[in-house]
Image (cartoon, rainbow, N blue to C red):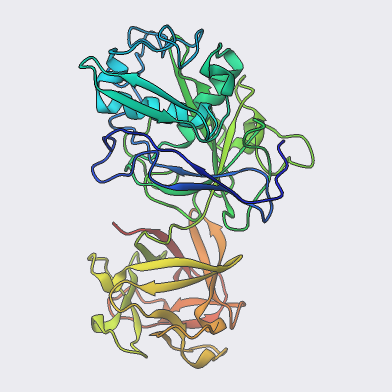
Length: 420
């Protein structure tokens, strides 16, 4: 474990096109930070899109770097027995260098393997030059030396942990036995999403994940819990419920709640923690009716009433979620820019749910208690014992949403999922 007493920015500048999703940033376009509140461990950004990179049937396809029969030690030219910077480690002009997808795949491999101060150059088959800069440093020895089986497992877990099937970049918190990452938690990333492991260098390649305890909380686009399409990995523990805790060995104390040290015979695991993404639009929908939180009449004014209504995708049904303090969040309506609010901070049953300009009040700060199957008790800071409640348990469009003492009724339970 690397102990850190300061905040250090990690940058990677990779001269490749953002192929994995149009408009997606490359691995070099954002700053990654090692946190200090409960550090160590590592804050990172994901964005590798499995549709054009990792493929669940073929691994990273041969054009992008991984042949399903031969793994990464295939005709694409990447050889784990030689250094990344050497010609016999990755030849210039091979398929991996001659497609934008292959270069981006290689960019993530370098990002995971090498530290931030190391850059290597390669050429495609047309003689064009590209630079690939490290960031995390999980296998710095691979720059000039061998990447053995332990190295391969670490790089596999790191690359898989960065996959996002939408290509969107989301901030993540990583835990691992790698000294470059370490163990620890952060209040900025409270939800344990899952763990990643396998060996995409093997013949055939293996790519696995298992569910963390919070995989269905703080859901973000393209990640576990978001109904991923085209995910590159499979859960080998599905028959046991799919949770890491049921099948993996926790890290040694005192880090036993941070992540795992062994899963399905693999001994180098990356566990990911996350939070709601403040740039994602979310919808909040009733377990009882399936209808969603809606600002009546699409009003932009203060005191506008909140109702339930069938989801139609209007901006008055979409919310941006921002953490205010550990466990407390603001919900900002996309249409009006105003916050979800209990009128006047009243703590009694039947208090109106409205939108109102930000004022810092506890009645605008919300917390969530899981009730099972991805639903939550959704409570204001001004009355933690209450929940959002659909009046009289109605399933009709236009029914008002109010505050009411928690009873566990399905009309008091809500899902919070990406809306787009």
